[in-house]
Image (cartoon, rainbow, N blue to C red; front, side):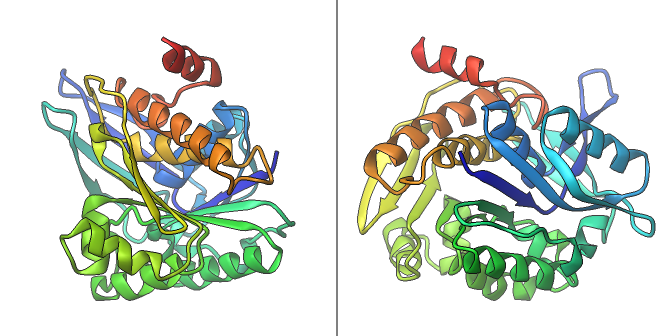
Length: 307
C-alpha cells in the first residue's frame, strides 16, 4: 500500500441546521479526501498550513484523530484557518461563503513540502493554486512527486471567490492538470475549463494531455471514465441526499484508497474496483450532514456495496 499525501485547505464548515444554529464541522476538500482514505484503511498524510488558532487546532486534532499523519501540517501564527459558511437548500445542494480571505492555507511554503518516494501519491485541488505563495509551493510539490516517480491526483474543485485574480483560473488549473495521472471533473468544471458544453469535445481536449485516468462525475447517473481513449459510463447508486457537500471528496477518497493499494493501479481490474468504491463512497456521503462526518468506514462501505 502506497502513502497518499494530500495538500491544500483544511477548513471549518459552518452549516445551518433546522433550529437556526450553526454546526461546526471539519471540512475542506483536501482534508476530507485524506480522512476518507484513512477511514478506508489507506495510508494518508496531510501537509500545508492552518492558523495557530482554535479552528486550526480543531482541524489538526481532527485529522490526527482520524489517523491522518499531520507531521507536516504547520500552524501559522500570522494567518487564520479557512472558515466557510455552507447553506443547504431542500435538496441538499449547497452554496459557500468564504469568511477568511486569504486563509492560512494560501501561505504554504516550499519548506513545508515533505520528501516523496517512488510509488507515493499526491492529491491536490485548485484552491492550493489560487494565490501566492501557495501556488508556487504546490506546483513545486507536484514536480517533486513526478521526479520521485510518484503519482498525482487532481480535482479542480473550482472556487473562483478564493482567487485574487479569477482570470488566471483556466490557465493555471490546466497547467496543473497536465502534470496529473488521475483527474476528476464535474460536468460543469469540464465545460468551464475546455470552453465547450459538449462532453465529448471537452474530453477530447483533456485527453490530449495524456492523463492516465480521467473521470467526470455525473451525480446519480454515475461517472464517465476515460482510459487510453476508451470512454465508459459506470452507473452510480441512487440514494436520497441530505447534504451533497462531501460527495465529490468521498468519491476521490474512495478512488485513491483503492488505487493506492496496488502498484498495478493502471490495470483494468484495479480501476474497476476503484470506481466501485468511489461511486459507493460518494453516494454514502450524501446521506448525512457534514462533509467529513459523513465519510464511510471500510465496513460501512462493504455493507453498502453488498446490500
